[in-house]
Length: 71
Image 1 (cartoon, helix red, strand yellow):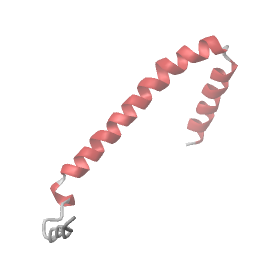
Image 2: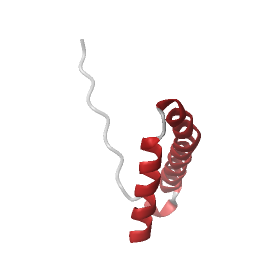
Image 3: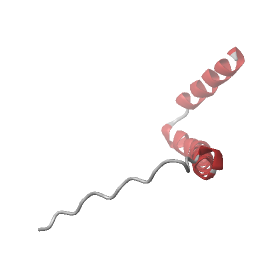
């Protein structure tokens, strides 16, 4: 795992030393698609968890409706 941290430190140092005019496109080309991919993965996992039959509780009694007050 130490190699990953060293690699990441090298990449971070490389990006920080770039001029801002180069940093922006690099970040937009790399970070934006990466974040989009992670967001889609989280969305699919959440959808799968919501649709998973093992996660449902069918034995629970439905909540009663609140009483309506005449106005």
